[in-house]
Image 1 (cartoon, rainbow, N blue to C red):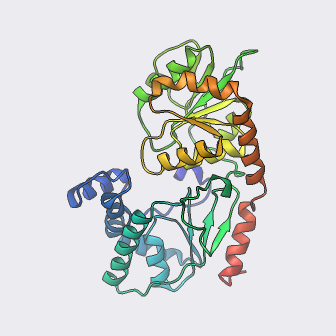
Image 2: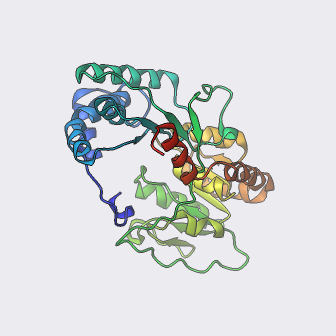
Length: 330
């Protein structure tokens, strides 16, 4: 993430994901990329154990007044308890399965005991997930929830300029294919791109050219901020990762989704229920699914409705001001 920070300093703490996964596999059986004991152990056990000393050292130097951590980052509440400072959780998607949440919280309680710190109640849960994407089976919204508008922040990556985006062919639908930051499968990308391109649709893919099968209607454009692309596409094909899904909906663009891991199946179910997406069981069916979304204006109409809902949510700077006020820091 350092390339996104501009002049700001990144204080790194703990090992990278590959090392965490390897250590977690040694400790716990099961697949940590899906909900269960292995993933609970990864987030609230292995990551805390391998990150705590580095994080503590960095926090001693930085002396934070407020700590904001992603919802499944269990180092954040430990640091807040250690230093006696307020802390905030920040979710990135919808509610997670109750059993999974319970398993992580039990492990987090054990970590507080092991490190001899008294748990400190959080100030708030910052939530970018619009209410219309919640399901009736979801848990009720948290009492301390503070909504935030996803997006609205200019993003660029130092040293990684975007590749040129070709002009959109006149009279031709254009789709964007991006599997986000967690699904790295070149064969899957090629299958999805080919299935759509063969229907006559123009396809932009956020991939390097050498990772895709060549096709006259498939354009590999490398890393490109979504805000630069979404105004010019009719449909987004993705894995239902929260970032891409929320960005697409904020722009009023419907999706075709092939969920792979973690919360992606849940996100896809929510998007399908809201009428903003088709969900694939087979990537080879992507072309037909794109055709259905393009051919039925109800998908775009529903996406525009969610975009209007997202637009009413508080901007990030307003949320920050509220958090500082809650923490007595303003």
